[in-house]
Image (cartoon, rainbow, N blue to C red; front, top):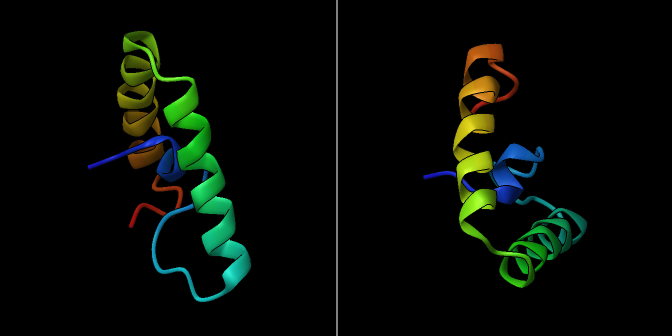
Length: 57
């Protein structure tokens, strides 16, 4: 699975409270701004993150 937080660098374990707050903030932004276009954008950006191997988890 992928999501707005994951493509924005907030993936993996949340060792600190700050990392957890950041991830929740990104998830909250996604919920408030959801659209079909945003989901398509997330899917496309996921491919670029995986291809770049930019910390894929």
